[in-house]
Every structure is written in C-alpha cells, then in structure tokens.
Length: 273
Image (tube, rainbow, N blue to C red; front, side, top):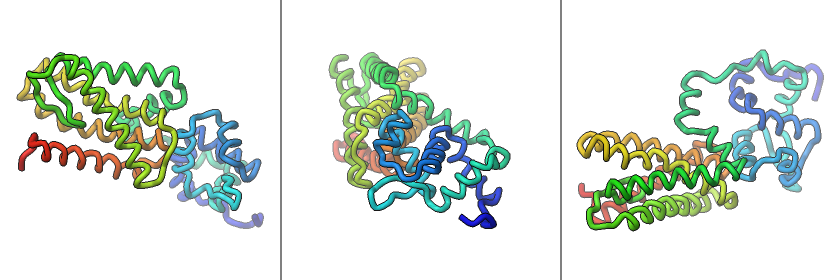
C-alpha cells in the first residue's frame, strides 16, 4: 500500500463500528492482517470458538474478508485498510459505542445467552433443556396443545401427551430451520449449536401457558401475538448465531416458518379465513 494513500475517513470507520467493537472480530482482523491467508481450521484453533460462532463473525465481516484460490481466509482491500488504521491506533477515537436502541435489541434477542451457550456446551445444553422443559410443563398444566408458534386448547389430551408434544414441536422447528438453511443458503453443519439456540428461543412461547393460567383466556389472547413475534425473532437470532450468518439472511427462514405454521393451521381446520 502506498504511504500517501488515504486509509479510511472517520465516516467510513463509523459505518463499521459494529464490526470493530467485537473482540472476536477485532482478533480475526488482527490475525489475518498480521499472518496473511489462513485456512479455517487454523483460524478456529487460534480463536477457540465453535464452528457456528466463527462462521457468524465471518459472515458479518463479509466485506472485509475474502478467500484465495486455496479457500484460505484473507483480508480484502477494505479489510487491509481497516487493519492499517488499527495498527496505527487510530480506531478507538473514531468508534462510538452502541446506541440505546441497539442495547435494547441485544437484550430482546438474548444474544449473550445464545453466544455463551454456543461456545460453552456445558452451560448451553442444560440451559436449553431447562428452558424447553419449563414450556412443556406449562403446556401440560394449562391443557394447551402447541402447533409450532400457536396454541389450541385440548381437554382430551393427558399431561404426558401435551408435555411430549411441546418438545416434539420445538424439535420440528429445529429440523425446519436446518432444512431451510440448507435449501436457502446450502449452510450445513453446527447442528448442536443450532439445536441449543432454538431450544432457548422457545422461552417466550414457554411463558404463555403460565400467563394463560394466571390471567385467563381473554387477556392472554392479546399477549400471545407479542410472544409469537418475540419467539420468531429469537429463532432468527438462533439461526444467525448457530449457522453463522447475518441476521438479515436468517429473517427469511423465520418468515418461512410462520408461513408453514399458518398453512398447517389452515390445513388442519384450526384456522379459518
């Protein structure tokens, strides 16, 4: 690079603040800038993170990273310019912190729990199973039969059937996410990370049976759409982190799940227009 070449303006750096403030992405930028092209296996060994987590960060850095003819990861021209700025200690003064909206969105999508669960299976597996069991117990006690992101009252089913059905529904959602990721983006692998995060995404829907039992049918019906939307957003976040893709790429999978859900309800006669 020529010494008199413009590196990056403060406005351009501000555009990339969300990439640069992540310790993992900063480390990737430094590794590739200092060492040059690296195969995925070597990069994973240096980072010590799960496959899905690394792919997620690489996806976010898509404009900063490219691959050579040997499929090794390397910095793009823009990435090298950012790395040069980083090496000159010019980034900290140009970067801003997250806004209140971004902080609220991070809390809403429980991103820290997803990341910790993906990276530390000893925490993620028990936490996801506890979240799933909480919802299954609630369904069994409330007499509600889940149909993906919807519920129907079922007085004829026993608690064992309702408990098992709830767990089966979220396993189905996981399988649908896996199939849609493969169909839309040919994104395979990291199945355990996705499974853990999808089970965590069941939290809002798992809360509904308890709300239903406390405040009754009339009021809880108004609460359900908000929990459905929250849970669908969490599923998108689960796909994003579990499969290593940006959240905007995961959103079509969430909308497809909702379309499948409405179709199932209409086909079974549970929903009429």
